[in-house]
Image (cartoon, rainbow, N blue to C red; front, side, top):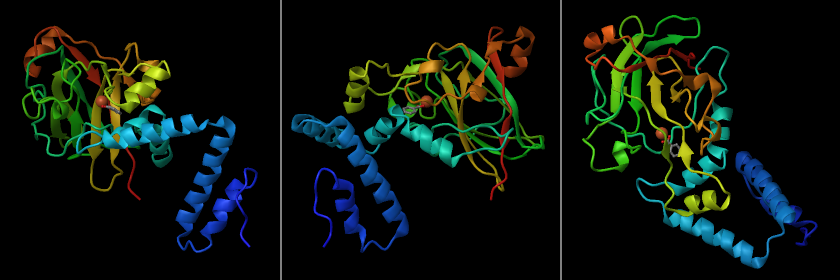
Length: 287
Ligand code: BEZ
Ligand code: FE
């Protein structure tokens, strides 16, 4: 006779039904899920009205999703779950560049641009020069590494989610030269809010939290024989660095965008007044 359900033995009553489960990983995951979920319900002791509000919240979260909008990932992001999964799956040796959340606004097929080109096509924003190298953990350059880069326009909108920007604006693919160097022009990243017009926005609001992400530029870097790296560079001094809505900030990724020497402007095809940042990305060997 299997355990009959009661408040005290609720976990066991559900786990007893896993006898026919053949996949050990499913068994492991469901066992942990049921144990934690019942523990949560026992801690909170929701009223039936609260239980239904939870169901309604999850229903509306699903209904908000479409081909572009993924409200469940956003929910995972603002609860710190995405960053926790990211951290568990990207434990890096000392010296390797740390990873952070990809976020929803990466698009395949960004324009391939030559080193030195400007990825800002609408000409709006504070001009900025970005340069550095891609190396392995011993400092050896990785030539031909692919850097897939994206950021918002000066208004804080990603081109893939706003239709009034030129196609490919603030998006680019660059490849490192034979010394592993990359360099390009862009604009200084700005801080912006994650989408708040859905259930996740309501939840942030009811928790008394803001929706802002500190200014950052996204990088997805790959090279044959190396683990891929998805990360950001964050702008030092941004007021939201210690309260990122999605917990993506890591100390090692906060960098200074400082005033550049005006003499460098003409070779960079930028106005005399511009900022610059230098950062070397360090990849780990695959396998
Ligand atoms: C972003 O960086 O663009 C982002 C990340 C997580 C959730 C929403 C936006
Ligand atoms: Fe972003």
